Image 1 (cartoon, helix red, strand yellow):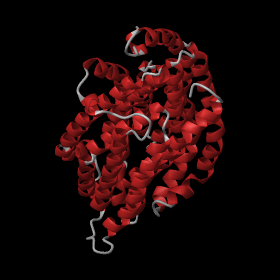
Image 2 (cartoon, helix red, strand yellow):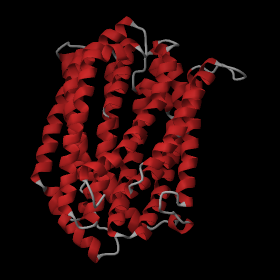
Image 3 (cartoon, helix red, strand yellow):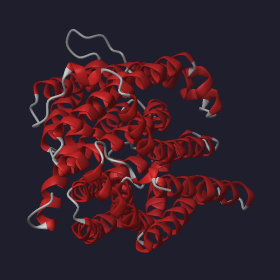
Image 4 (tube, rainbow, N blue to C red):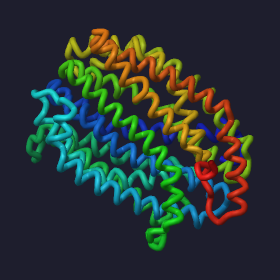
Amino acid sequence: MTTGSVRGKLMLLAWPVMLSHLLQTFYNLADAFWLGKLGRQALTAPTITMHVFFIGFSLALGISAAGTTLVSQFKGAGNEKKASLVGGQLLFILTGIGLVLGVVGYLFTPQILNLLQTPADSWQLTHDYMRWIFTGFPLLFVFFVYQGVSTGLGDTIGPMKVNLIAVIVNVILDPILIFGLGPFPEMGVVGAAVATVFSRALASGMGMHRLFKGSNGMRIAVADLKPDRPMIKKIIKIGLPLSLGQLATSLGFTFIIGIVNSFGSTVTAAFGVGNRIIHMAMVPAFGLSQANATAVGQNLGAGNVDRAEKSSRTALLLIGMILLPIALGMFFFGADIARAFVDDPGVIQLSRTMFRITTPSVFVFGFLIILLGSFQGSGYTMPVMVLNMTRLWALRIPGAYLLAYTFGMGPLGIWWSMFISNTVVTVAGWLWFRKGTWKTRADHLVRDIKDAELVIPATDMD
């Protein structure tokens, strides 16, 4: 990522990440598709679970992203020994967190569902589904280690291949276990969860095999698993703001799903289907953002600040070109896409309204995702936390409550709060990026890479 065409290298690194993100969405998407055949009550189970799941997902994502940042910087600085140490410590941290969250989530599933005002006609189905998903938390966290380390090294094809195999297995198992095809008993909602957990276990196993074998150009040794306090501290310093920002986002969405649930299972189903489609539309932004973070990290590690900035601006241009036709398709044909998941007139009509209101802000939000990748790659992760918290807790949640309840707009108030929060925070993110603070911190970062044994993240230099 430090030489050659910036645009070409970004796309070369981004397209496997895009496909990996798209494949990840198929875990829940496949569940939603087949469970939708059982009715909207069954469809509610993955919808509610998805938002709870993202609370744990946010912690894994933040710590994993810190690993990507450090690995990319060490890669740019030519210190692969330290890069492998980052991978080992990342595995130590995330495995522990995954085990704790999986056990706690399993034990407190009933309380979580009651807190979220889960509709009575969907409560038991969601309970059974969610408990199975919690058992797979440690497996998911292990896979994030592989994905984070590989991306930092510039290897995005390996994780894509692993994701592809796991998703194919999940798609095949879903109808077999849900409807009881062949020798398998009919498991209904639980069958979808079992298929998802098994697929994640497969992905984690393949990922760890590749890391310890050295298939991606860097081999984690057993000695790298021994706790290293200085490295753990550096991972936490970069990853904590990212995790807190993601956690705030996940908790915010969980809070919002509580508001959505108060309007009944029809609104919940529309919100769930709409969110999945929006998430799929944002896959190019996620891919380019991660590619940009790797490019920024490697170039800062190599001392090339100008190329790091050029990468960010090129990624912004590319995402605008990619998202425009996608946004237009969602605006005009969103309801038709929703019909493929659930044949319920009420859900389809609500989905149509949701897409007409939120799609312009979804297009704008793609630019913010790119900017967050720039901050992440530089190690200056405070803006990521602040912007994510502001979007949900300062704007969307109060807006949804006021518009939906106080002003009596109902579900429309929720859709409009999504539009307002995405647009305002994107503008704020652009102004923060233009301020250039991340480049000032980057100058210090480059000197520290040359002068110290370990990379000193920008968050250390306040």
